[in-house]
Length: 237
Image 1 (cartoon, rainbow, N blue to C red):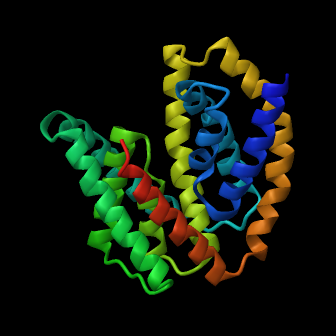
Image 2: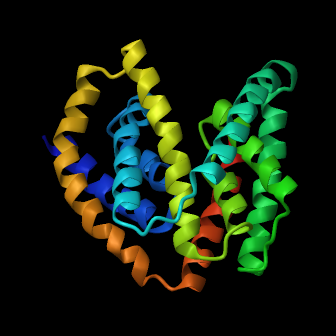
């Protein structure tokens, strides 16, 4: 019971951060809860809070996501995921990780040094969508790349966050479907989900309103630092 209570408290804090800023809930949650649960169990469990973040965040926000734009991002990410699997067998994973981390760190440094100045052409934005899909397929991480792409495409923080939530929500619905089909959700994980879901739902419902109180410059500053840290974590095996 104490472990479930600790799980719930940690997830309330980390995923409240994600619903406000659009990323990093799982990245923040994993190192803390890995003291009590194995990483694989936590990764599977994370599907629930990530879906809740996306559904609640988008439901309680003005409609800013255009299906055509989101569909283009997801299609490119799907191509990237296929490319990621090919790269996995052709290019050494360690080398790809270093190249990917270098790109993410450089974007993160630029965003930290010059917030609000990043601008992407349509071609560069689409290339980053592909790279996000490849990274997701190889490492299960796409947040830093996807958020970099969105920060360089849209000016309004609500639009940036909502596209991030919609993008990750789509990927997590797919992930959840794969888990269900393959019987990956064990009884232990099901108990973790059932015990934490009610508290998480209430907390995320109210935490969403915090996004509207965050100043535009502060939003971009926090996200920029999280992108930089995300790139640095990729440098460690």
